[in-house]
Image (tube, rainbow, N blue to C red):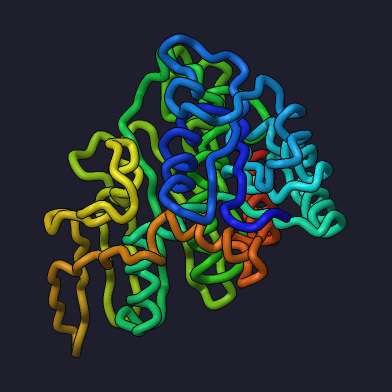
Length: 363
């Protein structure tokens, strides 16, 4: 392995690469954006023009055969993740895979074994672990502000009643497609980080759209109930027909209080707008978007705005790549263990079984 900076090759040049991975790589001196695989550049979408000096390949095989590539980032559609990650590992590269990891837990196990065989690092881009509202909830739980948690709701709701003109993998019936793999992956991962694996799962997958607006009848929406041993219930909900001025993000209820939060973490919006971690204001929510903390003392309730944690150098999406650099340098662990991402995929498989069989299934 070469010394820092590590050369990063990215397979795929879509929104994930442009909005998330390239900006996060470029702000860290430990990495160099070295090469990209873009099969079909166009005059208005050409990586070589946007990033002069990088190597451009048309095939993944060409990139992994480049001995100067240290780390491969897979940002293509989920159905291709397994073969591309396998290809990179077999060529001696460390690998970061965009979420969802792979369509099946069997594929995940095979990649984990392959990474161990070749003594390479394998990690998954579960960036929502570094959402500031999620970190705020972690802090509230660590301080026991809410007491014993009895119910945890996590939402990614939208108002998109039609997919007219969309060519995204998210709207196609294919392995790793649909709402539960796209957004549900994030929500389930966050819940497992807080509470561990559930005891049982009940799931409802489908679409809130009319059939004409949902070609192929892919699962555009989902509700997943995660049942825990102590009676705590966690709900994952993804909706595409939610006509709200403010979309609910979290609702956490405990014996001592509750926390309700609207709006999504703002890092994605900031990255899309061209901001970078470290820029003034990056990742900082306006006061108007803070959550509400309600506390109960002797049956008297007090509700007040509760500030979302402000980001630090180690609590933005940049931390994923910073931790990966430490791991490759032998100074720490990968930001997301492949085994943890595999467990999320297994829960998704169980959720699909629950929906198909119309029953609650054991984990």
